Length: 117
Image 1 (cartoon, one colour):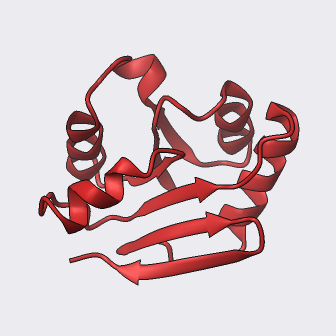
Image 2: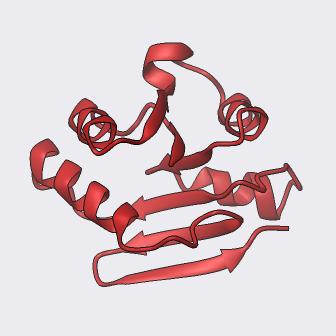
């Protein structure tokens, strides 16, 4: 999968996702400190699914009308350690094939998906 990881994802997640074969861009490496609007624009321009722990992206898309047609996954799961979190993120991404075009919220025991405008 082509992914754009917001800078709030731990490095262990980035390493694990790259090892799992995902084409990753990590904002912490490419454009640290970028505004959320810039991160979203970057993901959109490169046709990447945005993964984040920042719920502000939902507001940008649904209330401010910014484009995000390739999808956003908001993780709202506990982070007991970076290593465990990395394993969970890789497994969650592998569990479905319908992430694109959706605003997805991944919680401890559920995944909610809403089509993007």
